[in-house]
Amino acid sequence: MIQGIDHVGIAVRSIEAQLEFYRQTLGLQQVQIELVNEQRVRVAIIQIGDSRIELLEPTADDSPIARFLERHGEGMHHLALATEDIDGAISTLVDRGVRMIDTTPRCGAGGTQIAFIHPKSAGGVLTELCQHGSQTRLEVQTSED
Ligand code: ZN
Image (cartoon, rainbow, N blue to C red; front, side, top):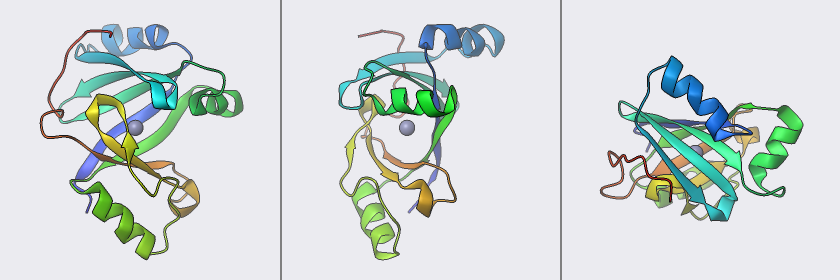
């Protein structure tokens, strides 16, 4: 059901301010920035081998990331696990009594389908299931549209 760790999501106030650390200090240059309007966030996807770090910057005061920043400040927001069958994974988890935030997948960054598991069912960690489309996994660019 789970194939690996897909990415770690980090809440930031400013992608540009934090990217300096990843680009200059860590030397990670494969960065793609996109808007995920549904979540009211801008996302910087930093590719590291087969996995990623996602920097999540709110684009509106009512963004879930804006509320997270208010309560916790900047820092780790969620862990994303890769699955090749997100619908199957959701129904399996529901059958096993897991509390899902999303019982149907929604659109994530990079053309993914995502669904969140409630932290109460995951040891206090906001956990995302993440399924990539057929050709999104290694598609990396630096555009900002
Ligand atoms: Zn994520």
